[in-house]
Length: 338
Ligand code: NDP
Ligand code: PYC
Image 1 (cartoon, rainbow, N blue to C red):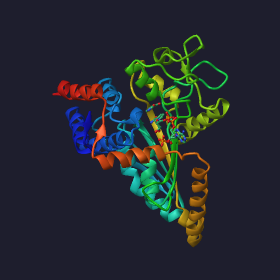
Image 2: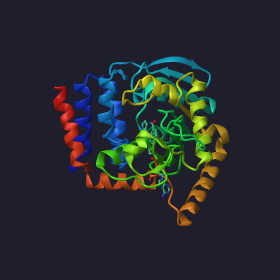
Image 3: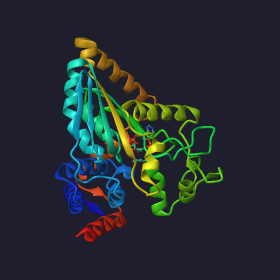
Image 4: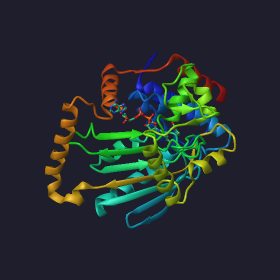
């Protein structure tokens, strides 16, 4: 079906309000999920509302938490999400993060005690729009086996990176799970009754599988073997341990057998190239442009170019395509709440 961004935004607000989420949560969650839907990032679009409400029903997210700043010293801002959505804590921390990066050249935002369920690029783009280079990451649940093992220990542990381009609407951004695919992709295969591509997961006996149900009982694989595995350990240490928050294994233990969203921390680092390079930044940014243009000229596409194309197309046509069954499930959520 076709739905306008305004209608989808209203539906998401209505669902969240019906389940008792504060206006701040309604706004930040809806913005994140509708933005992802518009860019055709289905694994982190409005489908996530189903898992979010399930998480609420299991008591593993707070709909009414107000994030508080717990540290604001030098280049560091820390926010306690008090078990609320990471999206709202990010909205609270963003102005201070930008301000500090513009003052000091580099700044770090640590979000603690948050429920994280979104695509990282939505945050990254808010930093590149402010002219900043950005990196963010968060652990998740222990679904992924380290390279060389068949036992889940690591999270899907996404890593986002953004670099401001001369056209601020199309920054250079990549953002992916350090597992071979996001958990959300496997869940969507399960939901749609389709097989997964090969090389993403093993079953409970350690054999390769393309069956999403068997994969969810077994373990997901890291991307790039030992390399993705090592980067994933960095995420556990940097976005978990170093900010005093949970590892993916601890998040899984916190879920206590419930099919709920990951709980823990997130780290966001912002660098202001205008402080790093002063007036020289303009010339160096042009060198960055030349480099990225060469990448495209080689026949390769840049990460995010598919998204930007989908976004432009959706904006031009004035509607977003939404799976009929998903729309029915979202309406059903609303009916059940009222
Ligand atoms: P993908 O494997 O699809 O990789 C995504 C990135 O790679 C995007 O930047 C994408 O750009 C780019 N890309 C994909 N194919 C190509 C290609 N052929 N050439 C160049 N670039 C390409 O995504 P994942 O399944 O790993 O992750 C999807 C999402 O899941 C992410 O947004 C991530 O943040 C989210 N996630 C969130 C978690 C959380 O805890 N909150 C946990 C894990 C994942 P484009 O979009 O333009 O295709
Ligand atoms: O797709 O791996 C995932 C994921 C975990 C939390 C949010 N998305």
